[in-house]
Length: 350
Image (cartoon, rainbow, N blue to C red):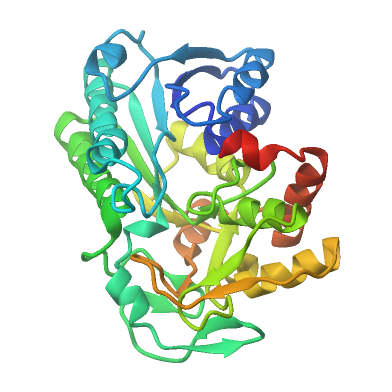
């Protein structure tokens, strides 16, 4: 089976590529990357050692995609994943749209032409910011936790697939939500298989440490190196909570999807409540691991910040018998070990 994997030199893409080759025999992977992100070159050698062919091209360019040979499946792991992308004054709103939506449409046209299946790695940030901030929360053990209330798509296990996706969701969220819709429409109109996997925060060793794209990695690396850190927004105490998932834990379901197993076209995949932490709790973990240090505070509220966002992956568990295999403790320790071995990681990936 021949697989085209976009964003192959990113953290998620490179991790999935290696794990797919180890999952079963018979996979031929062609990786695509424009190598625009600092640090992405580091994964080029790693992929080559695995026998993965890497093509330096840009999926925003239709002619680049048109030049690809036929494959059986496309896994789209390419994105600019910053929720502040295009609105922070440092990045282009047009480039966010081109990276995250137009690139996906070019890939869908490729799948239409070659009758290839398509898997989109989407995001928890397609869920409505206003609906998320309306969730009533209380501080429990230094982290926000929803109090009992009736909101469609909210349950004790987290946010399910029928939670609101109404605006505002950020330009990043909007491009991914539009990509989801185009994926379903292309699959239905042109009769090729499509899957949409909405992921919680992805995390693990080798992830590039940026506050807006890899918060768990960024926090641990910065804490260890005594780089400036601060809790931003809400009560200024770091009580905001997210879940985390190692991308290699997606691979069993990716294999089943490509093999044609039945299941819902759109599903949440996440670490869930068991694999969630507040920033304050993450700092406490770092203090035990590296020693105590002070964390700054900034009470200003940034656009699109939410106090609590944990995905409910119950549908994936029911339909795919799927659950995350990497515990949050193992995941954090993996990042910490990597941070100790790579003192210049933040500078490489900044």
